[in-house]
Length: 418
Image (cartoon, rainbow, N blue to C red; front, side):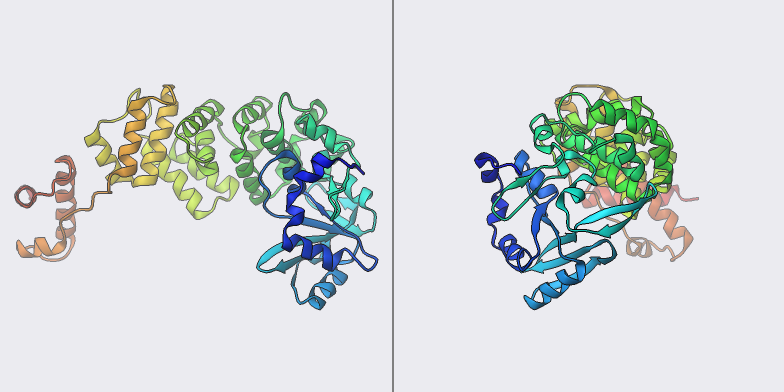
């Protein structure tokens, strides 16, 4: 146990009424409950605190019973593994019974419930994730997590290769946590364990890999971390294809220069999508959601017309580009093209082009079937082809809105019909 006034002061989330309510209900009558996990870690590191999780000596059924007795909603979200979600005034809190691993296969573990906080802590992955604290803010550190936290070092608890073999997703988690919280070089033992056990990632579900990779790509130091992973051959089992860490780094530089928030899906596209086939492969390999897959494919299609450019298209071409691909795909592709060009992140030409795509209303064709009916065309295939021809002329003329100009385009399109 560590008693440090400065550290205790950092744990302000313990004073929140909903958190205090959890302690009141579950940290009593012969059972001990402590805050654990990311909330404690982030609070001590000065990072934002979101979800607050708890570990308890109480078996899950006791947790359920106490919640109901206190008129709190309890959901057995992971009951077989000891996890109950308790809702306090609309906010969920996960409360998990202390556990001991009985058997692991690299993907999941069989556990027994226990009452020993130290044993529970030492079965976790990293030292900085093994801390716990009581309601008074007293911190319990069984694995040297505070020292590693002070050193901004991400380190496995115990033997790194054994920790990895228990769950091969810990390879990606190691790099994700280093990218988010680490400074300086990677922990050497952990890095060697990741390299030596990398084939185990083939055993993981694609959904778990996708979720972990997107979290890694959102981390503050993901660019240098991804570059190290690429160099060590650690992304091939994940992506099953090409990776371009240099383009990813430049995309992040542009994001930062423009004050944009981290966009993990765009970063994933920047890392490994050059052509449409890459987007299709990524959809299958990572089980992307429909929205993610469509975004990757849209960016790839739009980018095909921009590869090799050293300057952005002019305003007229950009408006046509926006009309053809839509705002999101157009902006994604333009940013990727800027990264490929290797120009400065704050190049005013590319920034201005992006601003035009962001601010220009998407052009909407001013013609409809009614206009053609009025000119004597009948509904059917001919009308559809005529509408396409008129739209092509309208785009080429830079989207005029003047009625006289539109009438002239309509006349020209109908005159050209066979």
